[in-house]
Length: 266
Image (cartoon, rainbow, N blue to C red; front, side, top):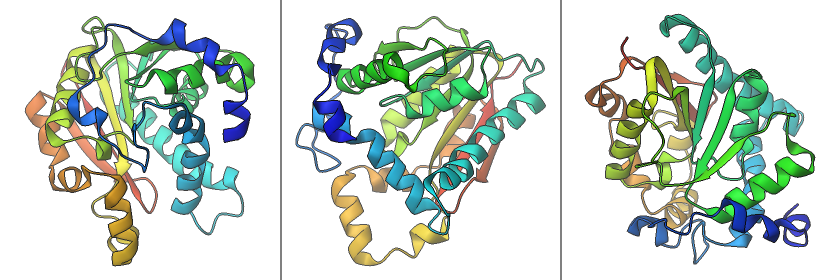
């Protein structure tokens, strides 16, 4: 899969997705995931989707196939978002969805398929990831729905206030220092309409699977994730409430991951 991307015409997408005026936060320029350039490289972008698939497979080791693992991990996540929005939004219509930290558009495409009538925007700090996302969409990975790709910092997107019904942040926060997570949550609150839903999915600090990792594996994981300790120490639910969210709920959606949902008051 990686070779297919690297040998494709993906490089032609860079100019149309890249924001030349973007200022990268310092933490984003650090090496992580064993890439010297972090997410700012073609190799990281080309390997992102197979890496995501392997994480999904590892989360459900007893699944008979990758598709079965995807149905558990992504299916449960999407159902929690839908149920929370139906219960608390006061208006179950989902017209506009923003996927912050969309990477190469894996989570964005799942959201597009789940909410086919919604306008979908995928936002990421890496123009390399966005170039791959746009290339994949143009070459058959899309649901037929046109996704808008935005190169911006999720902490300060520049997008209009109160312009989305759902803001998703999937597998992003464990890569962020705590201050960035707080800023992401505040920005999501600004971007959501009254009754809007934030949905955050990521590693669960209460996961027995993660707690039982061998010290060698845990040390290896931490070596490629410089902000993992800050992620596990931050009280995410309190950060959401302090930003103004209500109806904060946390559900273990698979053995490794939690989905935290909350509502902007009406």
